[in-house]
Image 1 (cartoon, rainbow, N blue to C red):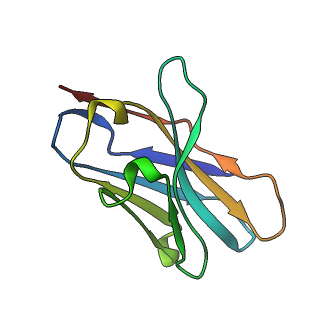
Image 2 (cartoon, helix red, strand yellow):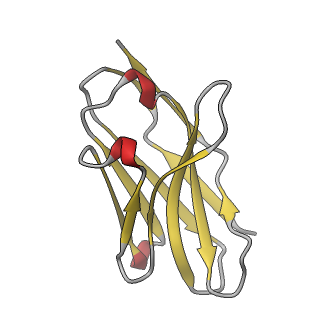
Image 3 (spheres, helix red, strand yellow):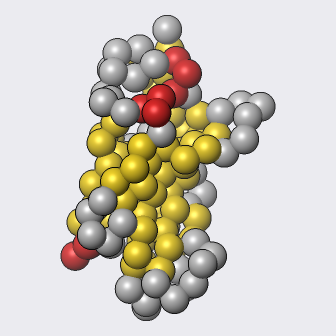
Length: 117
């Protein structure tokens, strides 16, 4: 059974930092891309950052220069280092993992990030 377990969310003041982790287990095929999405209250889910198997990264314009995505392939884990957090970064952050054999990715249950002003 595939599981994506996210951790690291919480409450932080504006300007602070958080580090999210997502550990994937039960995936028998090679993992291609790993990423983070977020959904703010009343808004659609949006891409925050993604990293492919070769280490190429892509970020939403709103987080460039503040967030860094990385992965540990040996642990099937993806990280999101979030610095200089802003209140508009508040939302539920979801881990997303895609394998090389399917266009349908796996999703985590989400971890809440709240940035106070």
